[in-house]
Length: 242
Ligand SMILES: CSC[C@@H](O)[C@@H](O)C(=O)COP(=O)(O)O
Ligand SMILES: [Zn+2]
Image (cartoon, rainbow, N blue to C red; front, top):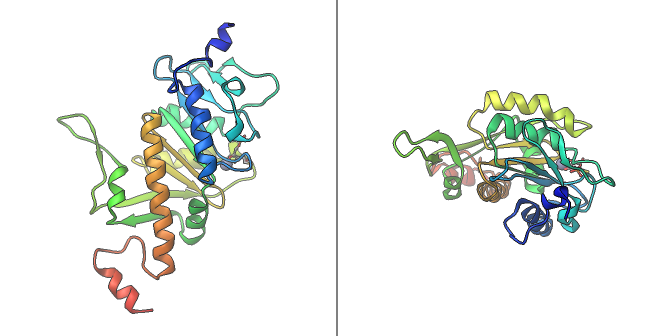
């Protein structure tokens, strides 16, 4: 086996090259990565190499042989399949690795993200819902040094940026959200989808699932006339006003 192929061939189902293919399949059936849209990038915790999907392929049909591998320091490709270009999301994934210390990034074309971006302005907010507790607050416990999750009584805030003609044109607004929302683990792109990152692929997957659940719930609440960020008990007033 060539040294390039050794980067993507492993019997370990948790190897990044295998995991990207497995998760993209799962996400396809969630309607998150259909019609070539969306994708996943994982940083190998052992080597720190970035694993990236090719552009414009049916993401659920990818195999490890199709993947690009990038060196985290030089940003040069250690492996680049000749028949493909790397994902158009690559500059955005790299920004999340470099600026947010991400271990993995998930990009979906979730319809819940798209509808929320049509309903809400520059920010998606939802408060006082149990599932919020799956999302990190961005703060770290000073004693245990472990990340602190949002509480049931908190408000989850996710910035919404405008879509552009090309994926790489989102980079300036993405960088701006890193400054304006230092604690966020996600950015919604209006009429497009969402980017979610975490310190590991397992965490990023949990955050993405929890946020998608909350966006779906917010759409249902909005349809009932209940603002998703209303206080506990305030929903009665909004329901009564119908
Ligand atoms: C359906 S085209 C979608 C792309 O423009 C992009 O938004 C996307 O999500 C995937 O880009 P890709 O280059 O295939 O990884
Ligand atoms: Zn996209």
